[in-house]
Image 1 (tube, protein in one colour):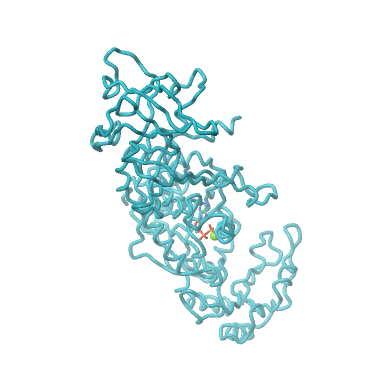
Image 2 (cartoon, rainbow, N blue to C red):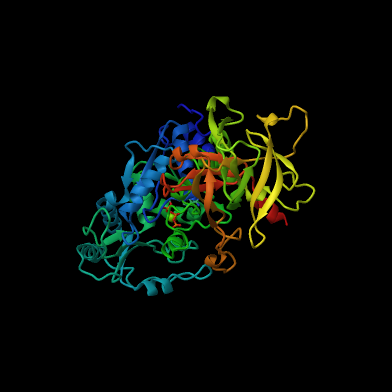
Length: 558
Ligand code: ATP
Ligand code: MG
């Protein structure tokens, strides 16, 4: 058995697998699966499960199946199937030939159900959903047997077949496992296995009008595919006795279900119901809105697969639920982008600067390194001329002592270029600063003065005549509170009204016209950005992926 170090982090699941390999429980095989229901897009929580399942398969030289758990036709669509495949691939994983659909097992699952009826372990129950609920009992009280519990095998077989043939209305009957209405585990109180549902299925069309419940479909699908370790989140711990019961009663191959803690992240929501609501109620522009915790949203925002995989590795796999701080994810994104993103100059809130002693009509080109620590990333030529734009924030008319940028009479360094001094401030009729008149020192070309005088600040700029206009979309956390929707609150009332700020009239260096959609750049001093899919040559649009530093840490302390 080979164990290449694809996923070096040791976790409790690896210990279980190591033991199973030692005892040859599964003849040395390791087969996991990632089983999404195609009823929405994948989010960062799914990424944890994908990295874990595919990572284990790779680490042990085994296989990981991609299985669509498509047993609920009402909520499922092909659009989601295709999006999920694209997202898994984007994240860097390959299921090879191991693509499966639970719906491919409908006939087999039906036969399994018949086998249980024949064994006297399943019955057709004609109580309404409401009555079934009333019969179920509570955590402290046992349930009551259904009056249909002792139907004969023959009667059950006949009714179940009629259910399949479409002879009954939705809800008229269900098929239930006959286990124990007094079990302390509510999942074992004769759970429903099949329901009648006259609905079109995205793959099987109108062939079926009865559909298996999750608990009946899932374990049997694992068994059919000869999964060794069926890894799911903690809320299924209470379902494991039922998982094992079906397999045991059917006498079929038995995978091992193992539960781990799901990923919860601050300042976002991850339940599919809520994500669907955010999209449906237009709180966001769609599943790929860059503020969404979906993989497609993160991709559009500029997060790389490597950053997300690294995050999943970093948070680890444990047994107790926890809430991970969004800043952990953002730090992974920063670390990755710091390595790979070429630098560029962009001014988000432009203030015009006229360098009055610079020759009119002259243009110089400065060589600018694409990455200060990585000469192998090359350099580019940035144009400089008499009129430039600087960031409005980099000027203060009446600055405090610690302000080292531009102010009347003060000198700063222009990145890659010269020292400039502010000589005059031009205002409009409202007293608003609209332009600065400056002078430069030709002796400081390249960034230092021969006479040894120092400046404390270096600011970025773009040449007014050469820069391209752009829209820049600043994204922030989607919610204002760490745990939206907790304590009976409505998560929708905790949306961050400033989670998207669109700045128009920004100016970017001309080379950015060539940035491909999604390709990362660091706008010096501002953060990491990438061109959005809305961007066009004549109307550039950039997304801010993440700021250079965590601006929330301070606020949370204060
Ligand atoms: P819902 O929000 O409707 O419960 P889901 O997110 O559980 O849906 P599935 O399609 O059933 O969606 O999930 C597929 C797999 O991803 C499951 O094995 C599930 O355990 C795993 N998964 C889902 N959410 C998380 C999460 N937050 N952390 C870790 N794994 C997750
Ligand atoms: Mg689920």
